[in-house]
Amino acid sequence: MDKTILLAHGSGGKLSHELIRSLIAPGIANDLLNRMDDSAILDISGRIAFTTDSFVVNPLFFPGGDIGKLAVCGTINDLSVMGASPLYLSLSLIIEEGLPTADLEKIMHSISAMTAATGVRVVTGDTKVVNRGSADKLFINTAGIGSVPDGLNISGANAQPGDQIILSGTIGDHGVAVMAGREKLRFKIPVESDCAPLNSLTADIISFGQAIHSMRDPTRVGLATTLNEIASQSQVDVVINETSIPVKEAVNSACELLGLDPLYVANEGKLIVFAAADQAQAILNKMQQNPLGRDSAIIGEVRAKHSGHVVLKTAVGASRIIDMLSGELLPRIC
Ligand code: MG
Image 1 (tube, rainbow, N blue to C red):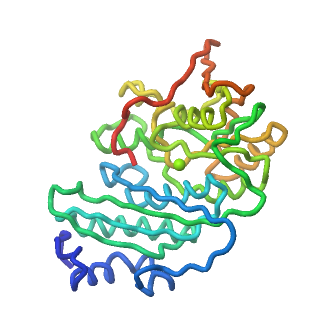
Image 2 (tube, protein in one colour):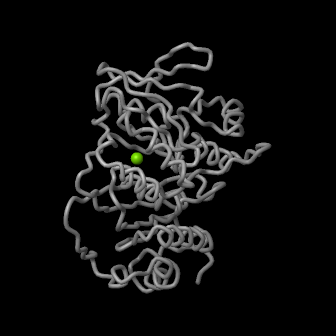
Image 3 (spheres, helix red, strand yellow):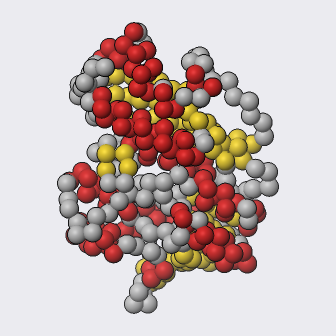
């Protein structure tokens, strides 16, 4: 195998076949992918969730993960927070000529580790190589399909007055880890990305059925913007308590140093749930028993139907409206 990826590896010819056979396909092989037809034929019935995402994170490798792990987890999570059980993925690689083959091998290894851990299968894919300078090392595009059980009605538009808002753990870990990787920053306590597949946690959560009104993963725009999205979609006001939002000490001090507000920093292994008040404590208890929800906390609640504002009650008892992120805080974070 060549030491770097060549344009001919994306030609569809002999070198492409060799690259796919020897490096891309082995770790993710399954009976559907192995057919190598123009499309995968899937036997699915009932309600289907369907999502797509592109991953352009810079650098490709960061503390706690890499672009491959991020691509699989990110797609699984967008299905999971809709209550879907993730089943199938597509995987499309856009590679810049000159990418070290060893890097691609490591990234494929992360992808196969995640698909093996979750049972989600890559059933179709594509590989393209573009000239040096036409892309930055590697971009990944995915699509994902999952099946949605009957009796669930989860949407950003379904938050109700009285709902309790549960956050599944600490915020800001991913954004700070990628920044540290990109700028080669060394913190006293290293920060790792929280990148993780949340399907086991959402399976626990959706066992509460119709008590789950809204669920979303606060990814690149952070917790504050995600809360604003739901408040606006549901036309409700949201109040959250600063002191109940878990933030790691190391993330807090890194954010202070970088001039960032953790409320707007990206997460890749966290979710928020808007749940009926009478079930919220039981849901929280269940989430805390899952390793991915160990630090879950009730961070606030939905107030009477109103204008879609998110209000933060600060540690000193003041209130301020927190808005959506304006502009781009940290480009190419996912
Ligand atoms: Mg999402």
